[in-house]
Length: 148
Image (cartoon, rainbow, N blue to C red; front, top):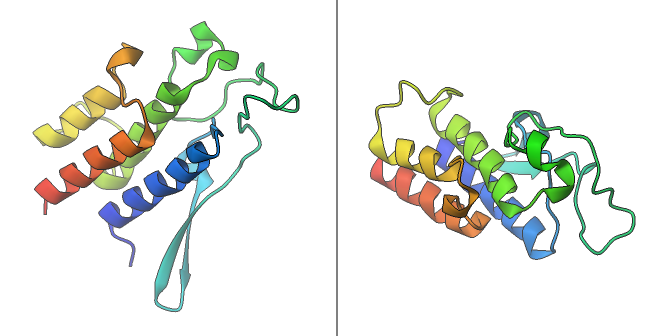
């Protein structure tokens, strides 16, 4: 069965691949992550690319409405057209936190490493957040390695 560490790592790797193609998903949420079990292999899939941002494309609407239950609430102020990688890592931090802990609320989190992960990924100051999915992936791996 799917382990928390494995699931979070696979999602990060999938989004890293998407970002390597210069796409931003813009709708990271629990409902857009799918796990399928084939024989003895679990496969994680990322779905719903309806809001994907392709900067050079004239087909991508930069004025799309705000969606994604895990998105940075500051997007309401800055506008969805200004969505960037640190908004993506904000949502991914929240998703990974849920996968690793089974919780959405950080208030009672006692584990210092997980709390630091949350604080960095959701920092109100975007310059202090994870600047890439690869940076966030390293943090996920260190959290889960510490907590074995």
